[in-house]
Image (cartoon, rainbow, N blue to C red; front, side, top):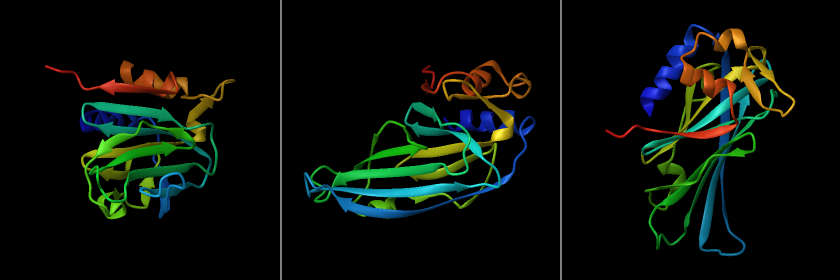
Amino acid sequence: MQALIERIEASLRGVVPADPIEIRGTWSRSARASDANIVDAVWRGAIEAATPVVGIGFLAHRESLFWVKSGPASADHELVVSLTAYADQRVPGATFAPGFDGAQLPGVPVRCGPDLESACAIGPARAATARPHRVAEIDGSAFVVIVLAAAVVKTGRNRLWRLRDELAAPLPADLRALFTRARSGEIRRPTD
């Protein structure tokens, strides 16, 4: 799935300008009130940009690349990385569930020990619009976002944004569809 993310980056590079942004966040941990043996480690982050932005969040897990678009352009989009596990590790590992601006990607199983926060690598704070940015990675599963400036998209009546036609036209058909259609989806790696 890394190859697809690299294709997206190469295709956007000549079409959409890159502007600096920052992504900063912090971890919190809590036990479930209904079951104190379940712990949630949650990283909440925000995108800091000079102008309003939109974006697509990707979850690369095994043979699938799940994706979801953020809401309309805003100056304050939230990124969330959630790890849920048994505190006593009676079932080893955790569920990794990222989200972007209230839109949730699927929760997927990952291997890790009881120190959830240390097991999950958070990406650097500095990033750029129109370039893939790894927000978090654990056990080979990665949460990647591509943030776009509001000036390069158009938002429809249903609050679904799409890349402007003149910018989408030069993209390969599959990537054009990703940036101009639907709110979420899954791309599976072809099997031989």
